[in-house]
Image 1 (tube, rainbow, N blue to C red):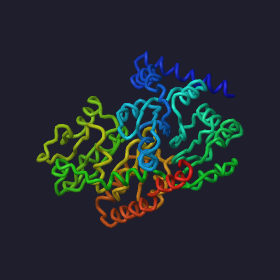
Image 2: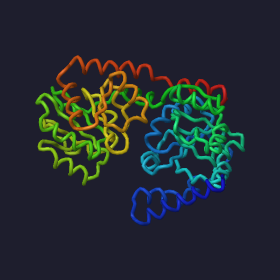
Image 3: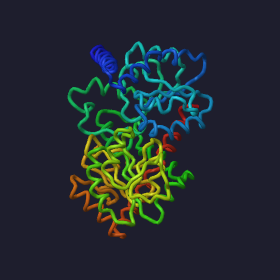
Image 4: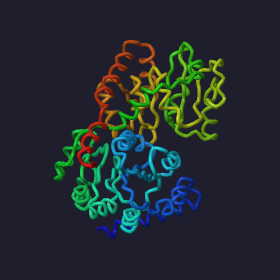
Length: 408
């Protein structure tokens, strides 16, 4: 099975390289970034290292609270941070918090052994879904403890199928799982894994920290003025098709900020064509109280949800919704599309009344109009979000407390 898995990994790497040669920009960055990977991952001498691996930017944000605490709690170690995705690596390759940022070499036994030869790794931390079985095996063979952070598993995953024995065997090589909920803990225990602690999602600690930073956007505040603001975050074209008709009839005492998932010039131009009265963030004249402000840069959205009365989270009519935690941490009710079932916080907040799922334009308009016209309804939803976040923070402290006894 290991031979077949390794062959498939090599085939995947080859296909990504081919896609890059054929013009796929993301694939090209993925393969080109790994061409000189061992120069970046050259031998580090006798230093002792802690290694955290994340898939992309979202998982990095999830692991960041733990990363920051590892840095302060265990200063005797250097820290290696690896990314699978170019979008995460490109954004964080110059991160000063850690001692080395690199791409994760493809998951082969040879690469895993070479990485451990080059770095005297004392413990490894993989975030959420990063199950790389050759790395898991080689870490285990070298008695290096591996911890999984903010793991979230579901009944139907291959680990729990009749053909999942080989994969389950690797899960038993993990020193400890820090999981998001009781169901994940139960699933692991059903397959004989007891080294599990339900800590919750470390992403809540991250967004909570962001929300309590003193960050202001005076130009945006002037743009909003005395109006109430709706923020549409990480929107896709399928979301914007719902937003455009609503904007045309939006009450005068409201404005909207749209932060699209794709901030390319071509996509932003399409949004501008769909709205009569709008302006771009990079060209913002705060005294021009247009109905809509388009955020055409990245890195702003998580900090401006503080200005929203309620928010629409995009992606639910495409593949899946984007992060809702960044909004609800500001006590902000959220609305999203039907593809949200994989996100525990979305399902739970919908049940509690702090979030609202819509399946079509009619439901979209009904929810928006209800949140606008009924102050009590909106305030109740806001309180639900506040109480929910208050119960969710603290996962990082639980993880660090356990590690203090193991990483001395």
